[in-house]
Length: 418
Image (cartoon, rainbow, N blue to C red; front, side):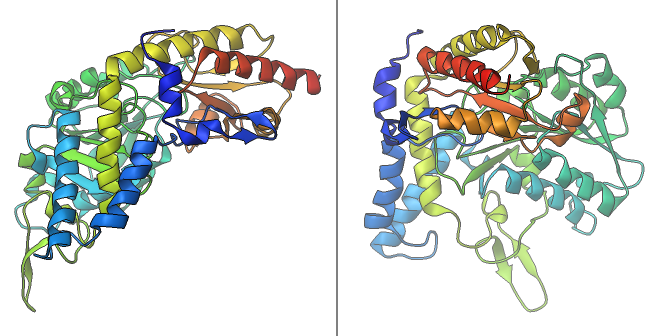
């Protein structure tokens, strides 16, 4: 294996010590939700046990401790993303909430004074790709319906990559928003986001990157990416569920209309009207996900301590072994890039004659946890003519022995259904 000490890392994750159906757990569903190291579990529990209070509202000791911990997590996330300012980090419930925040903020710009540059309407276009998660399709469909804009998408090749020649054809000077996934949750494909962002910039469109799958696995530098907005979610980054992050350029956030109204996001309130706080608080109405944000900061520190380059190398090796092993199974079809180039540690496949749910169930009986379904990316399944796929996805705690267990498990499934 690569330089990562996997056996030591595995000891940090208590759930990996358990058994399923009398067999050691082989957890291959990190693209769905990653497991949590003890440090993250302890951080959330300790906050509730010793420091809990609401943030930015009290001058007592617990209130100060809670606020400091919450804002310290914001600093940690800003450093993780190489953000120019901590005030560009908005905490949300998850990446779905972050993308919906943007979509509704754009529609609120129709009547919001000073937000003229965000206004979108008939004749404007919103661009996504055919491989997007539903969270990066449905909010933009709804925005198009509210405003009269048109939704367009960059199509896919047979091997699960974007049709590169279509990038310039689809992103035209009518584009107002270009929102694309960095790494596909269904295909594993790593997209040429720098090129897409550059094209969006050239036509004057706002660029948004869905980094839910790339944040745990790839170096993520928002300044290098050059996008206007980047979002990710905590539970895939070995952090808690219930917390996500929206990063945006400050010059955009300061003019972007709010999405939710309520406490904390205001500057002044009268019965006649209100003015709004500066970013990021403008977009954090109500009591935020305090303990979850604190624990997310711990998860970021954990991942940073291991090193993104080391993580990438480790998972690249796992993916190469899994692709080789799965390709050796007669008739098995990989949905997505068949070779380990510009792809992440996620592999979707179909066993002919066996429904993906049956594959997943029989693998579970062997202690192997994978996901089956359309993975909230149904247009991908439609594109490749399959009702669903079985998906194995790897993380920092997986081993080559577990890859071997997956391949052997799929072979056994074929034998059962032969």
